[in-house]
Image 1 (cartoon, protein in one colour):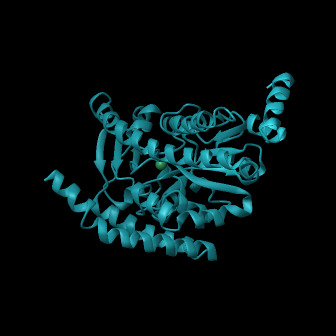
Image 2 (image 1 turned 90 degrees about the vertical axis):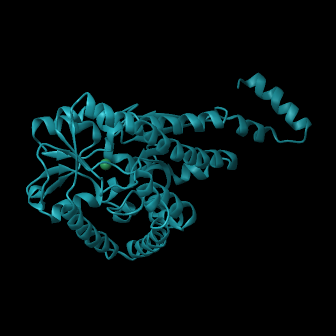
Image 3 (image 1 turned 90 degrees about the horizontal axis):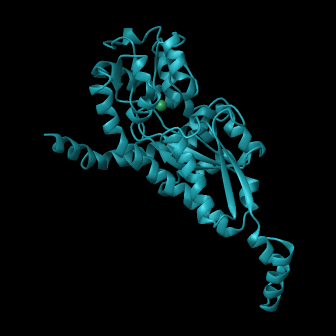
Length: 357
Ligand code: CA
């Protein structure tokens, strides 16, 4: 507002018994940057970040304006956490397993191989004590993490050869992040982590033999079907991956209470919206992959899945033994998952089976 408008409003406020400075602060526009791990406007992930920024800007009536930067626009894809921690950007949109080198415990707030689904993750984070543990893990970095999207169950990945036995995983150089990568390593493969934007080139040039990304909607967008023929399921390594909003703690605490509430509420809205978008778009994208691009959709053989599950358990338990914090999170996570399994065994599981019968 200009000086004249300020003086008039200030005068009116003083007449009503309000301090002029309070009116001024309520009117100040705050500008935040949001850095992301995704290519700008990438379907689902990038647009989820856009939605989050747009919601915060709109819900605050423009008092808090958030501008989104795609991967490499301000910083590289995997430096989002550091950028938010340093305050280079006030917000970030990414997924917590990308920080495993710095914060191994963060992986629990992304996804676990053979772990919780999206619905269970939401239950654990919002009502099962998960958020409090997450806050504790990020506190030393001056960062707040919140769920802000979920992919649902992902696909296993893209391969140029069939996976008929465990031997087919040996020597396989595959892009697969988080603990899923560690599982592949134990079975003789070589996991690599690359930002999504580099997958297509890496797969076509032979830098990697296989890759996973997300699911039909996102994998179609990157054209991965042009680089590999076989599309395997299920994504045992990512059964309900949370996309996280990262918020610089100091910047958050400097906001008035109503803007703080808006930021947190917008995260919840986007968390729900993104999962709905995947549910709506994955089936059509899968049909397109099969009918137009002649992709061969295959299930991992049962014995391969059994071994993947066994090794996954070992890998998760080893992570839990790494630190006191990891142990505490693992106990909370496992307790929630075990209780949930007792119920899903007589609810979701038989229902989905009955629906197919
Ligand atoms: Ca993935």
